[in-house]
Structures are given as C-alpha cells and as structure tokens.
Length: 217
Image (cartoon, rainbow, N blue to C red; front, side, top):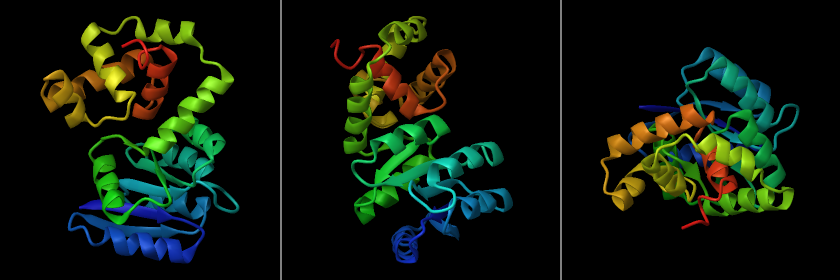
C-alpha cells in the first residue's frame, strides 16, 4: 500500500482528496494535516510514502514543510498542490526539494495516477506548471554556461534521456521514444541526477532547459 499524507488548511479539500485517493486499492491516506507544522510532525511519527502538501498554508506553508520533511524523512516523496499563477512559490518549493507539482483542479483519475507515479519515483509535473517554471527561468535569464558544464560529462545517451525528461515524460514514455527498457532509463536518470547534482527530476528538467537541450533538437 502507498501511505499518503494530505496537508491542506481547508478541511473540505482534505476530505475531498481522501475520498478520491481511497477509491484506489493501493492507496491508504494515513494522515491529514492543516498546516506545515502538523505535516512535518506526521512524517516524523509515521512512515509516509507520498506527502501531498498545499503550497499555501497558514503558520508554516507547504514550502517550509517540504524542507522539514526532506530532513525528517528523506524517503518521502513531496508533491505540492498549487493554484495556477503561483510560479514564485513553485520555484521556492523546487529549491526546497519538492519532487512533484499538481494543480488543485487536477481530476480524480489524474490525482490517483500522480500519487502512484510519485510512489514509484516517476515524474509528477502538470504541463502548465512546467510552462510556468520555464517561463520564469526565461524571465530571470538562464545560466547556460553553468548548465552546459553540469551536463557536459553526460554521455550522448544520458543527454537524450535528460532532454525527454525535461519535457515531462515518464520513464515508460522515454523508453518508448528511445527504444530502451524502462530499467535502462531508470539507471540513466539515476546517473544523471548524481553527475549533475540535481536533487530530483524537476530540477533536472530545469537544468535541461538551461542547457538548451529542449530547443536544440
């Protein structure tokens, strides 16, 4: 079973997410929290596979909670729930170690698939969030030289995987496009993260953009 924490300051939102997720046979919502402090405390006392955190919460927001959870329970995958247009907060959450982002208007089936993918180490990044991140990078100016140094030691095969990862594809989708096995793609991604110093796939996607891998082909 995938053990999930749902953190949102709105009780109705928490109840709605719980009802949706518990329709899946392999998901169990084991904890709820109304603020960032309670979310971090839940991860300290329970074994949580996926933490769904509202990015905007009182007292201690989702970004701060993500930082706490990264220290308390590094194995927990943090997925942020955000509203469209909160790109500044998304960027902060990315730096805090969040490994996925979903919009609050995500449909029930997509929400279930996202939790399952997160638990399996797959990317969880709504296309509109990807666009926000890349647009923000363009506005602030990308550090192409530094990005090229970080990606320069990757093999051609790893650069191909990084390029497709940067577009938000899953391991299976990357494998299909490159005619590789899913296991090979997973191994490539592990080496990419290690060699580039990226904490997760989302940071690797931004790096791929900065290095020009998304526009060169």
